[in-house]
Length: 174
Image (cartoon, rainbow, N blue to C red; front, side, top):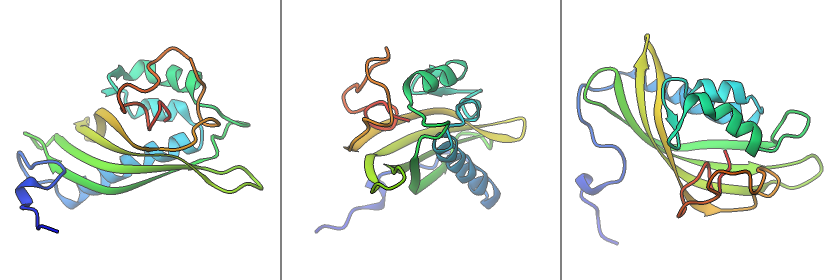
């Protein structure tokens, strides 16, 4: 095993003024809100996270409809658990920009059943501070390990199901 030069390490490259601890906490809370809003089936909240940006190239105003058309809910819940990990954040060119990468593992469990892996992915994010609040400017998802998403999303609902390993949390799941 060879040691990697830190310059070659994956993750965002610092560009501008350093992020302070409060910015890191707020951006991390944004990543957690992303996970929680899918898990609770709160697609309106999920879409608001992208109000000032894009999700997979889709403008924020289209995100809620896409989620309702593509993500399955059972009495309002998705029965998923999105776990964010390996968060790496770096400043943008100004104090109101930041970049980040993270991983998210999605499992799904119904009462009386064992949890199943839906997918493991990596996310590349651009964040922007708007009116004093951090928001997603853009989010790109790369599928790393597909699992069983058959009870998490509808098939054939119009948007690209799996564009060369890129999609919404795997094979177009949230």
